[in-house]
Structures are given as C-alpha cells and as structure tokens.
Amino acid sequence: MTDQETRATEGTAPEQPTDATLSRELTRLLRGVPGVVDVFDAHPVVEAAVKVVAAELDLREAPGLVDVDRSEGLLSVAAHVATDLAQPTPETLARAAAALREHVADRAVARPGGGPGDPDGAPTEVVVSVTARLVEERRESAAPAA
Image (tube, rainbow, N blue to C red; front, top):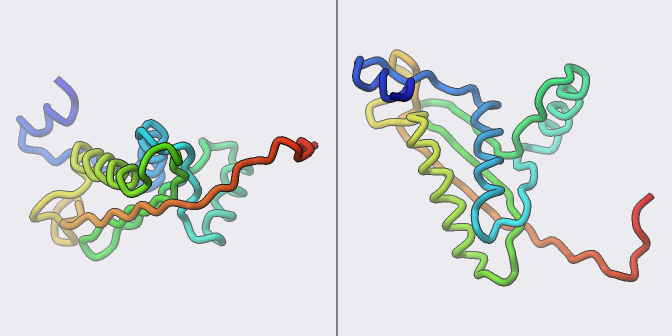
C-alpha cells in the first residue's frame, strides 16, 4: 500500500509536494507524452534566470521547467513544449494537458473542497495551460557550435 493509499484509509490528507518538486515531476512527465519533443521553461524570464543561478550556486537539483503557482485556492500549471510535426499539434497539446491534469489529481494536489480554509491548503481548482513553440530545424550546412 502506498503512503497516499494509507493516508486515504486513515482519513489523513496526502502530503502536498512543493511547487519545485511538482514542477520537476511535471517536466519529466511531459517529456514522455507522445508528440512532445522538448519542454521549455515556462517561468517568467527573470524568475527563470534567478532559479538557474540559485540552482548553480547551491548545486541543487535543476529546477523544473513547468510553471506551478498556487494562490487563493487555485493551482495554475503552465508549460511550453515543442511538438513533433508528424503529429497534429492540437492533439499533442491536448494529450499533454490531460497528462498534467491526471498527475495533479493522482498526487491529490487539488481536490474539491480544498483551498485557503483547508487544513493542508490544497487548492480547489486547477488551471492547465500548454502552449507549443515553433522550433526551427537546425540546417545541415550550419557549422556546429563550438
């Protein structure tokens, strides 16, 4: 029996992952979604730069690329991905969004009745946004970067 199943049978709430932990989990998850060929940093530019520098200075695990924000009973998840041109991008984005929603639900990060008044602060509502970025193919004649 998993810790989450044990807590469910005991009536205790599952432990809430930190935003950084959840971001790393969701980044790994997106890399396995069919049609997703890359995941890009979805954090605001300044925030992303600060996190990269902080991670380098502390020699901590690299930050996740998925932006996770919790406030006022809402969990917002934003991701930017590159998609395989051989598959329809809207279908890939739908699969990616569904995978993110399912993972958040499985981790019990958000649940009905949760929110600021909830003992563990679990958000009530989840908003997921997955966007595709256009990535140009590298030209064969281009010199490799040194």
